[in-house]
Image: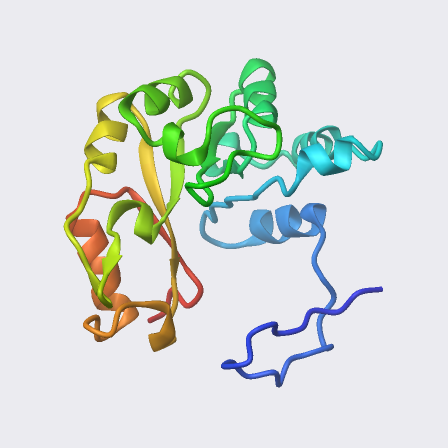
Length: 206
């Protein structure tokens, strides 16, 4: 019954209300029908919140995946929480991404803070159950006085324990990056120069 709407005030709303929100089975069916291989990076959203209300999303997620026959090697399954990823690591061969949120906070299912998870010790713990970390741009390059500062060692530390580094999110709007950065494309190049393995972009054409 729901229809998609543009939440940002600085983007066009011309498509508001025209398209239904796609379900996970519909996304799998669409990707499977494409002429060239399509990869997917689904995120398990707030599983602890849902599980506490008797709506565990993980069995439904896995059931739809297996029914579709979509190749596991074309998936990266993400979550900001730890317990669901550990559960999937024990029961599947899926590639898993530990998303890293606000460094001052901890995952909703408890445990170390996100800042602690980005230490060499924390990354080694993540590597025991996940294949990559998903980090905000400023987890790697802090913004100081409106410009990117010196990079930290997170990329090197993650690679040292076998984790890929995926960065979010590159957007065209100038408000989404320091004023020194002329475009989302140049910003992306800056991060690839750090050695990151992947980046999320709202407009991959630009």
